Length: 262
Image (tube, rainbow, N blue to C red):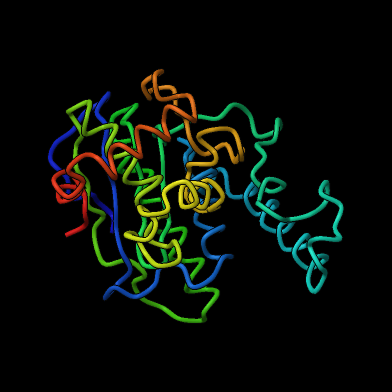
């Protein structure tokens, strides 16, 4: 888990990073686990060592627990939106006293499914992705083991990755991560999602553990940076129609076969 099995890459390259649970067991047992992993994506993407940054994160974790304790047992429909812990925004804010962010990598898109995850990353400084994934792996594993009072591996092994060179592959990968993966969680599965594309696309937009909603301003967790993505697909309707074409009209299995996890 400390390194990534991927062909050589350098600064400026785009990488599809993915992993699944050890022995194909769930990585995320409940929503709090998924939120925690997103929290790791947000705050571990910083060049400072975790020991240097730990005090800031410790304070934030404590505040998260306090918020959750206050809300426990309350109906979220009756809560003041300014105080409610509904989508994680209250705990994903970067505080001014922490100084300017120093990202290790650019996160373009992500998706969390119960037993695996996908990240679309750009190498922006030498070794940045490797360092980021080490921090993610160690931090999330400690969290899960502490929560369950267990020890051992959470992930299958080393993260796998594929370097993305082709522009069309770049766009299809983003569709695969942000749309195809959430479609698999749609009622009736991927085939039903494709047959009810508009409804399934809205489901993906609303799904809190993929980046589609954040990509188009429906959420703002501060995790992703879409500046590398083609401007022609920065409009939600254009992106939706591209995804419709990719999933329904084009030979989806031809490119998805290269993207699925081994």
